[in-house]
Image 1: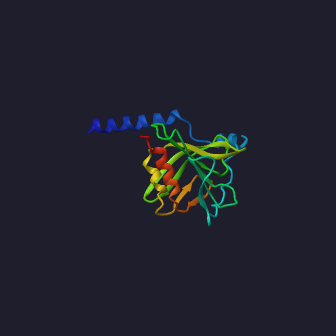
Image 2: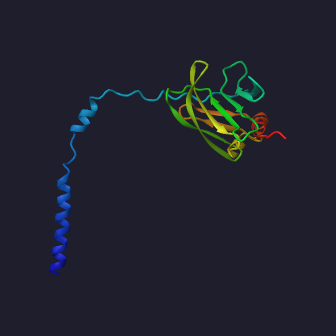
Image 3: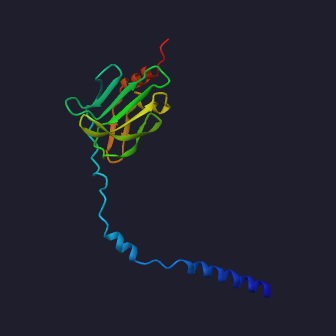
Length: 180
């Protein structure tokens, strides 16, 4: 009985000793933090664009497609590089404002597939947009199959609805295809 009591006192003394090593929290740290300059945060999110009448169209070469409403700025672009090789890649560009130095995951969702592709703020035609290069062999490109609508989202860039078309998957297949 005495041993148990002694052991209990030792545990209590040890706990009190550890608590004494660190002073209690104070408001001094938050007062110092309140005097620091505010760092710039991310830009305000944009609204989801209206894609009524938006179409896919070849633009700038045989292995590049753009998506948007005719007569209005491009909303999304897909371009193949190194077609037919193990290094074949599709560059996806969401033409929406991006903050300098920012990075994010672009979500491509559709037809039972979810692709999450890394994108970075990239200068294109004088403005920063979201862009990333992804291997053409990734199965997630199946989200672009023409059976149903797909969507693209990037944090702060709204939800972009992609109307069904056979052109995106034709580009993916052409990019993957190894010449015989």
